[in-house]
Image 1: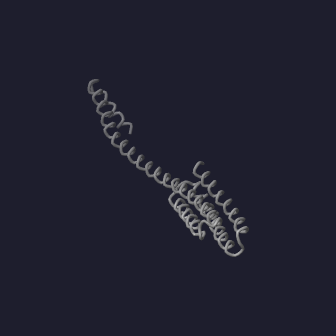
Image 2: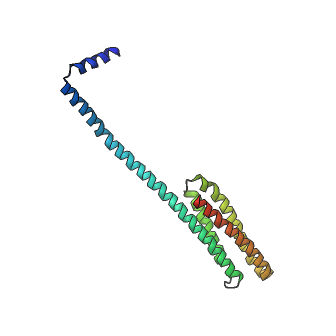
Image 3: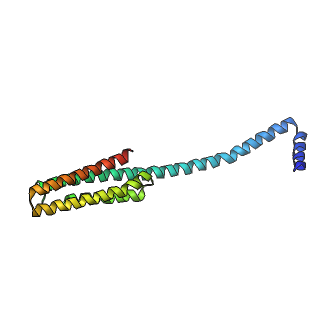
Length: 172
């Protein structure tokens, strides 16, 4: 090892200053020539990964907003049903089911730990809301308007809670 080092030192000492400068310049140029394409490739890969992450997260947020909109639409349709503007609670149920499907999609595509932890809980509360909407329809047919209004109010509170939780999830 020491002999090899001595050989390199001897070779460098035998070069003229001009040749040493040319050798250093050539070494720097070679290093830059190799590193610039590598850095460019690394930057391209990084940008592609960033674009993919941004796309997935924006789709997740968009679906969360759609789910919140569907919950509000479901609440409005439930009120319309209770006030006899709609013949059944089917519109409210359909909107709630679409919101549930959107939340399940968000859970599948998102990599965010917060969303992964909160989505199953939101789906569970949304299933409770769907059951409450079904109960409103059944009670209105059996017991009449006052009891259905009371259950619709409870369902509305549940729907409002779902909307707030989705809003907190997006804004956190």
